[in-house]
Length: 141
Image (cartoon, rainbow, N blue to C red; front, side, top):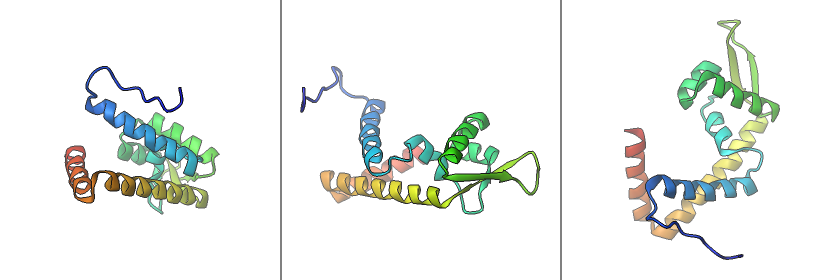
């Protein structure tokens, strides 16, 4: 069945369309930045050079502390972050991006930029600009 594209029976709703776009993005990331899953990218992107505690990182990413901690452990196992005891509180852990993490972020950033360019070329730069503005307005309130 190569080349067959299955279409939904009903008119695609917004979450379905977003899922299709994310599927394309995940496939591209898997080829060009395979060390980093999109869910891990979501956590890694929030880290400034000085790092954040896991609880603050969880708040930034709108995750539970436990869920964020799980992603941090995955990223640490991949060598993308370092986790150290916080200076201000021995119970807190500070997460910082490593060189491998910065490299993975750069690769993912290149994929995202390429997708942005391809989609702008597909629909035209003005329509893409307006789409992004509207999406940011809806997403960010």
